[in-house]
Length: 280
Image (cartoon, rainbow, N blue to C red; front, top):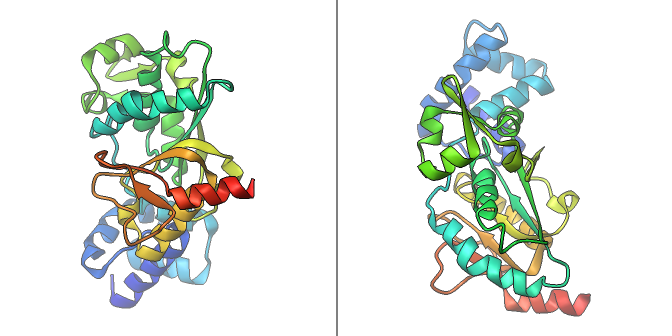
């Protein structure tokens, strides 16, 4: 792929998904787009790029963006956020929401569903404590193929071996040939929706908790700020934001602040929260 073609592709990816691809990742672009070229009947990547230039087919562009989106996920990834959810965030929210008994959670960039399903299993294990509560989990992803896979709730042996305790595998999954099918009881606790993080999330409603882990690292600073601003707009003043261990809000936005001694956990800044309450 020549420099001009790479730059055109990088610009399109940035505009469509926020994904930043630098020249040293040209090999990644070529590797991931080869299957797309074959799917569309192109003899090589030059023909694919030419088609994008001359007839900007929306479906072709979407296939290209989907192919370039990193869809790495595993059950109970990095475990610490789930411990914090169970031991710190949930008890605080249950106290604050005692009258409504309703908590809404958004898992952004959910890939093939392991993160929201991990939360659903976590809450299922706490069903006695959560009796009478309504816990809503909305999971979104840019890639329609990933959303479909997540909804199906079917995983390979390799996928269920990554982070999923054997006790939960036996309890919530049924083996079907060389695949594992998640139970309807857990699947019914999660709603999935195709959604682009570059859009403002007002259409998704307000949330008490947002998981937006390991996705900001693929964006440039302005895009990170835009995404975090949208999340702040839809997060309750006393809500919680989970980011990946390598991600931070520092130097990007003043809408959030770290929760002391809790890595990866953020809250709406008290000044911002106070302003929101005053406005209400």
